[in-house]
Length: 118
Image (cartoon, rainbow, N blue to C red; front, side, top):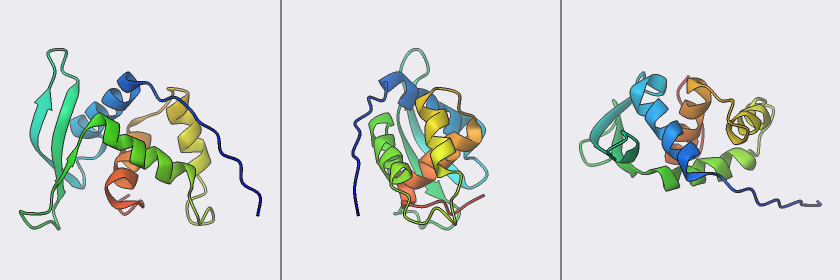
């Protein structure tokens, strides 16, 4: 199989905006957000994210840079039949025309490596 690897710069502000969207409504149907740390302009520096299924010990610390793991998982979706919208979501995120659903997908891919909720 042939492979094409392309490097794309993802602006830091985009990562911050996506994380704020997740916390302020994009992912609140499945996630619980603890210990939200913000900058003066209200961008999120870090947040502890858990689920209703989590024990108290299992929430994950998420900061904007960690969302890059979600981008990597989105870019290499292995089963496009079950996640056919992955290329469209990646395109929208990288072109800054995304919505709360796209932000939610990215957070789930960051935390779980797959989309579990929604």
